[in-house]
Structure formats: structure tokens, C-alpha cells
Length: 270
Image 1 (cartoon, rainbow, N blue to C red):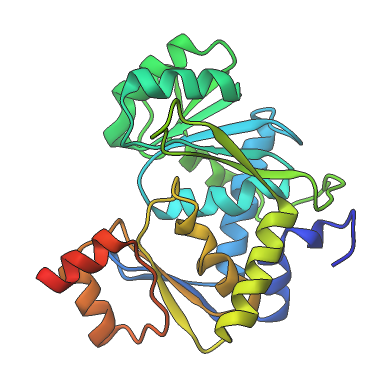
Image 2 (image 1 turned 90 degrees about the vertical axis):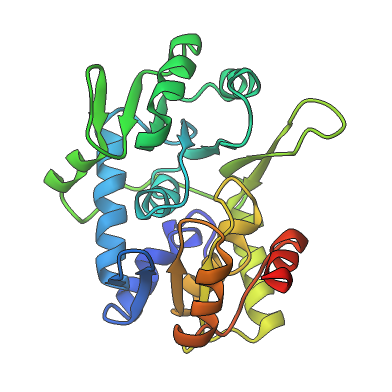
């Protein structure tokens, strides 16, 4: 990894060059499969879309959505531009989220269909939000993320990034006060992935499901980033479901699994 090179962080691009035809991502509900070349192409179109909306290095992009392929594309697209993902906890009340969004000062608010009304209210109270981006069909005053399909799947100019540049903001639970934003840098994400790969012996033949929410630091960062690092396969789920989990164990060939105690308790009681 070279300091100041986009390869510090754009592992998806590098992996797409190394093993373009290897299976990278399975969207479990739909069964759609993507190679690393296809996944990186979507992320590049997403990055070009963000750039057309004025997003650049240091700008925050708030995401208010459940796990979905659009979210996972944004996860890899934003750092291509040096932008910072502000991952919003959809379990919090609108009152709690208002303060969080205002403190992050995002330029974009990206949301899923089931959170359209709340997203409109959040954007109305946060003066920094310049655009509301709908993951589904756009209504008045919104821009559809699907507009990215009109853009190139290659990315031109890259920002000069180092390991100390921020990648994302994740919020504490607020059990002893208001939720606080914890900034993860590119270095944090990189070395966490390296440690995961070496500690668990992860290699290209492995598969792991992604069930925990993206606003949870363990969601994308325990196995998904490591899987991309080595060219393994991520199985994207909409969330945790015991029936689906047992199906994954029996039929999907998963080699690694992560959960919080509540998830294991639910599996035990199933």
C-alpha cells in the first residue's frame, strides 16, 4: 500500500483488476450475483453520480437505509472520491437522528423507500443537505440513484488519499448520553481488514453472509471488507432472520459467520 495512492483504499478496483471474473457478491433475497468487475463497475458509476452532485474529498454523504445492494455500492463508491459516509441508525427516533444529521453536515441524504417521509423531515431541518437521493423511484424534489446507470463505469480523476483520511462515521448507542460519532479512517478500515484476514485465515475460497446493519460497525467491517481484500464472496442479506440463517448454513456454503449475542440466542431458541 502506497501512501497517497488510491490503492490505499480502493481495494474493490484493485481486486477487479486482479480477479475480474471471480464471484464477489450474492444478493441473497434476489439471487443476483456479481463478479468483482461488475461490482466495481457499479461502484464507479455510483462515484461518478456522487461527483456530478458536487461530492468530493471530505464531503459527508448520509445514508438512511437498510442493507441493500445500493448501500453496499455506496460503501465502496464514497471512498473512491474521498467522501465520508455518515451511516444513520434507523432504529433511532427522528428526534435523535435530527441532531446526528445536523452535526455531520452532510451534503447528500440517501434513503430507501421505506424511510422517505423521515428523510424529507431530516433534510428540511438540516441546512447542509443539498440533495435527497432516493434508492428507489424519485418523487418531487428528489433525485433517483438509478441516474447512475447513465454514467461511465470507469472513474477518472482520483483524490490524493492517505491512511489518516476519514472513510465513515459510525454512532455509539448513546447508553450513557447522546450518540457520538466515531470516525473511522482509511487506515482503521485497512488494518482491521488485514488483521481479520490474518487472524481468521481468510482466503478466496471463503464465503460470509452480511446480516448486521451497515450502521453497525460490525456489519461491513468484520468480514465484508476482508472478503474483498482477498477476493472471497460476500452474501448480502436484508437483515437477520433465523430461518434464512439456517438455510445459509445448510445450502449456501458459508465458511464464516458473525453475530451479536441476541442473534445467537434467537438461533438457539428457534
